Image 1: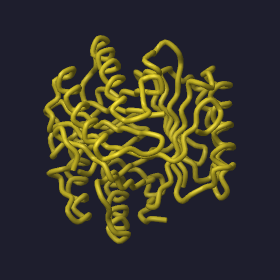
Image 2: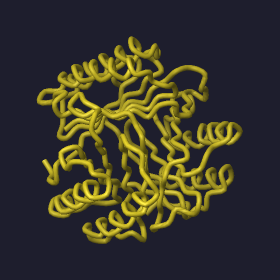
Image 3: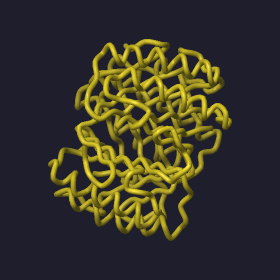
Image 4: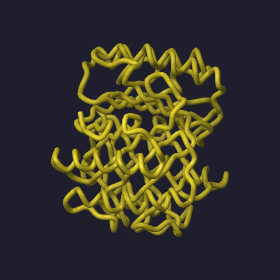
Length: 114
Length: 114
Length: 114
């Protein structure tokens, strides 16, 4: 029951989408109990974005939303991995990526809540 | 003060938008104190999305954000209803819809916070 | 480590984007410890939106996401300012703007969490 929502100010080519899917699908397993089998991904591309008042470089705002909680250690490892992924696949500098975590108490799927 | 934000990987036709508006406007009243009179809806359509590593079926990520709190029972009923709505109006399988709830302590409108 | 995500049902012209950037960059300093130097902005424009069952007027859903916490007083002042900004720059009525605040415990940047 995790979902990773990515907002970027650049377009994503098909092969980049597939690479992100593959790498994020592996990375989510850093959080115990989570896997690609339950992972949803959404991408908002070509958005108008600013960081530090500027818009001239590629940047990403990544929201990791999970049902339940995880440890600081897991989040630290996941941040490291996600930054690496966006640098490798999209060429976004590590210092132009924000990753925000949200722990959710109520999450529905298939007509019922977990 | 609720807002329902929907992200889907398909386009929405005008009549589908109106049906969703009408049905979600009724469904939100499942939560005591909420009604269409205070409901905002946002739709992000045609997004690149993946679930379980695949993108070949229609899917939805629905975020229900409310000011204050509600009971587990209300959320259970709302999840059931929202899944049904997305199946009826957009043909999305119940098991391709995630619904995430967020209870908010600070919410502004009309220049002031509630 | 704040991020302000704006969803509107109208397009944004270049000069409007720059005005929003400038004004939101100043407004965020209402929250102690926050400044444009760490502020990310994202804009989702031309979205299908409804408020009170209607879609015929410009409207905005503004999400202010911060690492850590702030006082009610800061949020009150920020809501007043943000509503004013959207009215001045985009002509959106004060009563067609929702501002939702999220206080985050885990926030990553540059390969590590704060």
